[in-house]
Length: 178
Image (cartoon, one colour):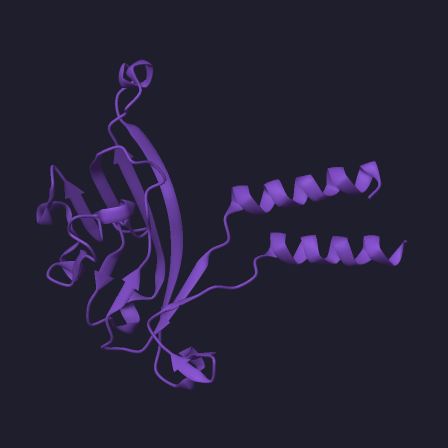
């Protein structure tokens, strides 16, 4: 591969990683949906925030080993819980129960951990924006993904993002020039 192709490849790859491809989850009204998220560190989780841009309060707020409802938007009270209350394997996914069309939108997961590094500890906790998910709640067959011939609803639908598509196009163009 020519040097300019390697540079372009790296730029596209870094761009796709930095931008993060938005995961889409589709569901029908009344279903329960898991919003997947996991911390990248083994450090103790001190705060977990699930938010929706535009809301003043959180979808889910966890601090000091417990969910704190006073910071939670009233629309989500009693409908959101940790998928695994022990957060094994750094899993901070939440289960959103009885979804409705008003739940459609972007969800963001943010984890704050105590630093295991003495030098970083002086700076306080480490905040980590983990991921964004776009939930689509709608009636009808357009929200059902097909996997192995079976309809999948309320599950993550992973898609090739623009960075991945750009990489494939670059490799195709490069192979045509050989």
